[in-house]
Amino acid sequence: MNPRDSSSSSPSDRRLSALARHLSSPSAAGVGGGVSRSLASSSSFARGDSVFSHVARAPEDPILGVTVAFNKDPSPVKLNLGVGAYRTEEGKPLVLNVVRQAEQQLINDRARVKEYLPIVGLVEFNKLSAKLIFGADSPAILENRVTTVQCLSGTGSLRVGGEFLARHYHQHTIYIPKPTWGNHPKVFTLAGLSVKYYRYYDPATRGLDFQGLLEDLGSAPLGAVVLLHACAHNPTGVDPTIQQWEQIRQLIRSRRQLPFFDSAYQGFASGNLDADAQSIRSFVADGGECLVAQSYAKNMGLYGERVGALSIVCRTADVAGRVESQLKLVIRPMYSNPPIHGASIVAAILRDREMYNEWTIELKAMADRIISMRHQLFDALRARGTPGDWSHIIKQIGMFTFTGLNSQQVAFMTKEYHIYMTSDGRISMAGLSSKTVPHLADAIHAAVARAV
Ligand code: PLA
Image (cartoon, rainbow, N blue to C red; front, top):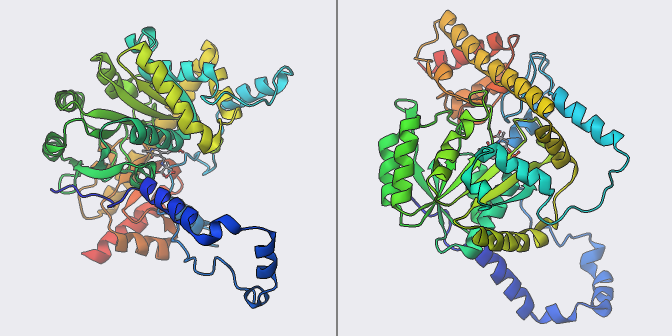
C-alpha cells in the first residue's frame, strides 16, 4: 500500500501564515478605541450580524459524539457502547475504592495547598509513573536517562510529545497503524508532524496483518517516528505476540526509527501491569531511545481528572536533562502547568505498598469483568445461531471488540435497538453487563440477518 500524507501543509505552517497575514494587514496596527466606536454605531451591528456568521457547524467527534447522541435518546433500553469508559454490572461508572481512600487522605491533610505545580508537574508522580511503565529496576531509570513530565492524560502526553518532535527531531513524519484511535492523526497533525499509515489489521482474518506491517515499516524512511499501541490496540483489540514484538523491535532499531508508544490501557489487556508494559520494556532494554505517553484514565478510572505522563528515554542523562528543558518550553505556553489533584491521587496510590496492592486487585477485577463479557456475548451469539464466526470476540483483548459490523448495520442497531457505538463497528465491552448482553446479541443477530 501507499501510505498517504494527511495534509500538504502542516498546521504549524498554517498557524504561522495566519499570524503573518494578520500582522501584515493594515487594520492590525490600528485596533484602537476610535475604530471600535465607529464599528459599534455601524448598521451591521444594529442588524445583529455576527463576526462569526461564516462559521460552519462542525460535525460531532466520531467517538465522544456517540455519547452526545446517546444522551438525547429517551428510550429506557438504550445502551452506550461508544466511548471506552468502564461501567459496573449495574451499568454505573466506577470510582475505585483505592481512589476514594487516596482522596480522603488528601482532604485530611491540612498541610496541602493549591499552589501551582512546576511546569513538569508533580515530581513524585513523574518518578512513580516512570517506574510503573518501565519497571522499578529499569536501567534507563537507574542511569537517569529518562525524563518524565506530567501531562493532561494520554491525549495531552501525545500532543506534547508530538510538538517536541516537530521542534527538535530531524524527521517530521509519524507512521501510525491503520486503523488506529481516531484522535491520533489529528493530534499529531496539529502538533506539526505529517501523518502516514502502516498496515496493521487484516479484516479477512480479523487479526494482525503482520506481513503488511513489516513491509510498510521496512519501507518507511530511516529515522521515521513510529506510533505503537503498547497493548490492547484500539480499535481492533489485536496485539502482536511476544515473538512478533521482537521482530518489530529489530526492524525499527535496524531502520533507526523512533518508537512512540501510546500506553492508554496498562493493566486492562491482561489484568497485569507488568505484562501489559512488556512491549515497551523490551525496547528500553536494548538501550535505544523512545517516547511513551501514559494515561491513568482507564486503569485508575481517573477519566475526568486528566492525569497522564510523557516519558522520553534518552541515551544519556545529559541529553535527558536538555530534552526536559525543551519540554518545559512546549508546555508553558500551552497550559502553563498541569492540574494537581489527579496526580496527587496517583502518587498516593503508587507510593504506598498496601494501596498499590489494592489497586492491582481492583484493576484485575475490571479486566476480568471485561473478559467475562466477551465470553457472555460470544455464547449469546452462538446460542442464537447468528451467522458468522464470532471467535474474534473472545480472542481480541482490552476494552474493545472490533465486531466487523459495517456502518449500515451499526446505524440499524442504533435506530431499532437504541444501541450506540462507533460507526466502524467497535463496541466497548466495558460498557456491557450480564443484563444487557441479550439485548446486544439480539441486535447483532438482527443486523447480520438483515444483510444476508
Ligand atoms: N490513546 C488511545 C489508544 C486511546 O484509546 C485513548 C482514549 C487515549 C489515548 C486518550 O485517553 P485519555 O486522554 O483520556 O487518557 N480512547 C477512548 C476515549 C477511551 C476517547 O476517544 O477519548 C476511546 O473511546 O477510544
